[in-house]
Length: 551
Image (tube, rainbow, N blue to C red):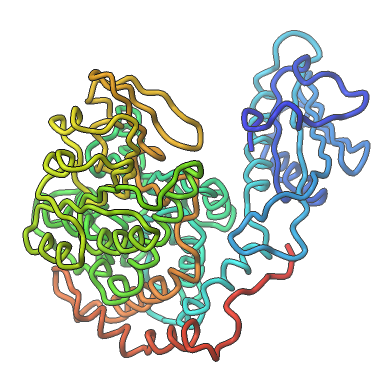
């Protein structure tokens, strides 16, 4: 945690210490870091320093206080225990990891801070910050405990020893558990490249820090770049990431490895799996989302590799989407706790696999749900499920005034023509990045005001106002973990089974998208029976476990 995130009443108090503002640059970092690890982090940084004149000298006046003299400057690292806080993982760890607050400061004996001292200060902040954000061993065990089916199927697969993996998904706990399972199955950790989709998931910084500390490569390839809504800075960063990914793929191929992509939403559409000229191509892929399948289908060039279709698999359709819908509704209610839901009008844009489940969940809460869909058969299904139905957003808004509009189409759900029709004060909740991008991308000539931890308030030219909940992306991932680990356990286990099959029997899969083999390998592995026995039969061991603490 950086200083900017620390309330003034929580600043580190050190009797007799000079005011931090008087000593030059300083940083406050909080996390589960004990005294021995703090000292180890400092020594790790000092050991990396190039020999040049007099080296830095480390002195420790006490177990919690350390001073480094270097190049006419003084760097101080001090730590103190923090009171207990909320759990750092979805499942609590007992005993809870002890947390500390660390103050890193620097001051020159005269004049500005020397360049060498400034570089050492920056390196200390980065290394200590990385370690304060990392999950403890007990927290990692709690994540593994929450994915018992993934654990069950993380059996050795010799073929994985000769593969590398590019994994692009949300930075949440079940992603950590999945990659650990791939590693236990035989994939070398040094050949795992993780990419965040850029969502503001609750503990994304912890996931990234743990990936790096554990030995994975970790970067961000923002989803806004994939769907064409990114700003200049995001596009520039994406180009750099693409270069690093291409270099990773090239190194893997140079060592005789094949490269697998597991992607949530269209990395392959960037060219890694096509027959178009491109610096490097991967050898196989597992696609996790329908939007990703659409992007692959619409990408230039011919698909030149096999892609396993987890997006439309039985395990995701029958089990995964129920959990996704549940997380959407739970996050929605939590982010506007002052709002009444029972009996009020809600408009749902899109009645697909996720939208239909969300509609039923909202109706179960007592909401009066209207549905918009452009596909006539889907609209018939919604009507026969008992919902009021409309062919367009404009038609729906002419008949009702909802307090909430939810979008899950993956396309532009509110157009410029729809804006004047929106009820004043309406909430917009998107569960796909493009749903309300007209507002989030600044194309509506609306005045934007950020509401911290809630969303974006827009004053429209018409005089009305609307609030986009979250950051305009999938709301269930905005400052939230999304789906419970046990809720996604079967889906992650199914993905693991599919990935192992693809890497083991690549010769069986011609270029193209494959669904039937995914369903078959999952069925043959007995995943659905294991899922029922574990969670639904009422005879399995309790599904809620508390991990013991050990670093």
